Each structure stands twice: as C-alpha cells, then as structure tokens.
Image 1 (cartoon, rainbow, N blue to C red):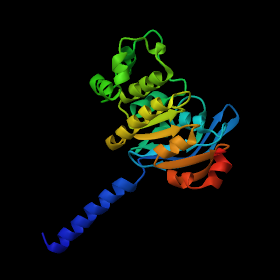
Image 2: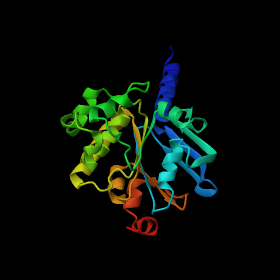
Image 3: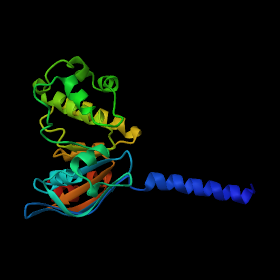
Image 4: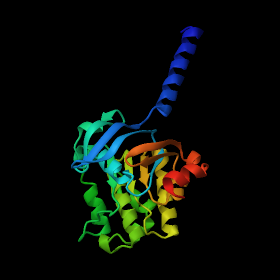
Amino acid sequence: MSSVAMQSETAIGSNAAELETTRPFFSVRDMHAYYGESYIVQGVSLDVRKGEILALLGRNGAGKTSTLRTIARTDNPQMRQGEIWLDDQPIHKMSSFEAARAGIQLVPEDRRIIQGLTVEENITLAKVAPGNGWSLEQIYESFPRLAERRTQEGVTLSGGEQQMLAIARALARDLKLLLLDEPYEGLAPVIVQEIERILHSIKPMGITTVIVEQNAVAALKLADRAVILDTGEVAFAGSAKEVLDNPDLRHEYLAI
C-alpha cells in the first residue's frame, strides 16, 4: 500500500472515530405530545452523546416529566408528531415495552417498587426481560445497601434505598438510556451523593442518562449538558456549565 493510500486510510479511520464520538447517540426531533386535548410537549428537540448525562430542567409544569414519559413511549401523554432515535433505532415507532427492550428504562418519581416482593425478587423479576443486564453480583457490589437488605420487602426500605432499588432494577435490564424523574426528592445529602456516584460509574459503560430534578444545582453539577423547558418548549440547550455560570438564565427559568 502506498504512503498516500495509508495516510488516506488513516484519515478515514480518524474521521469515523471522531464522528462516532460527536454524533448524537440519543435524539429527539420536534416532539409533540398531548394529554387528551391538552398540548403539553410542544416541539421538543434535543441531542445527547453516548455516556453523557443530560439535566432536563424547568419550573413546575414546564413539561419535564411529560417529556420523559413520551420518550419512554407510555400511553400518556400521547405523541402525535416527531421522532425519537436511540442508537439508530426509531423509538417513535415503538410501544412502551418495545422501547424498554430497545434499552430505554424509565425510573418514575414514585419508583414503582412491587409490594410483597423482597429486594432480590424485585431485581430478579426485572431480569426476566431479554437482554444482558447487570448480574445480581454486579448490582450488590455497586449497591452494598441493597445487598444488606436483599431479603427485606422492597416497599419497607427507606426512600433512598427504594431509589437505589429502582435504579438497580433498570441496570438489571439491557440498559442504554436511563430516564430518572426526581431521583433526589426527599433524600438525605449522603444518599444523593451515593446515587451520583452510581451515575458517574455507569458513564464509562456508555449508558446515557437524562435526569429531571427540582434540585437544579445538584443536577447541573452532575450533568454534562442541560436543556431547560418552559411551558413545553425548549428555552435553552447547551452545556451544564453555561447554566451554572449564568445567573440571569437560572433566575428567569429556574428561579434560583
């Protein structure tokens, strides 16, 4: 092979690698969603690269939870326009269970721990779905509190431990995109730090996270990027640092 050809091949490989690291792993394009005739999500678009953490912020009623639910393809709200892409898969064409199989896991604000099942049974039930999620050993290594309480009924755990269990169930599935709705609500700072440690630890594995959180400063310090919603529309999209460094922006849209 000539030196010119070798240089050309090297350049092509370099460009391909650069494209892989810069192209969006997860994208939403002009997404519109309704609760009945109530127009809630109004043309939301966003891009997230593989392994990034995105803070989805806004005042109460801005459409944050509705955006997460639409991405997860729940029945409510109903998506009527737009596209959702994850790892080149058209999520907008899928039902909720198909989106979950494609790697999207929503951890809702109420956590949905199954009553009557122990910690381990809650995790084991999540592993019934096809795919290669974390093993019990991996989960207990990362969540030692859950290992200590593996035989305890899940709903009797503290709020922070239930949040850990909800995230652990998501990791037990074949996870590509983790959607977290208000994961810090009502939790002690030490538990928040534990959850942040887990979220940082899964970044190198290529797991992408979108976090909705009223504690905007904590979410921004955790995140790589930020999107601020205002009455269902994107008011800002950029780096998390830009929001932290812009008091006028924070005051106008986040009241902080």
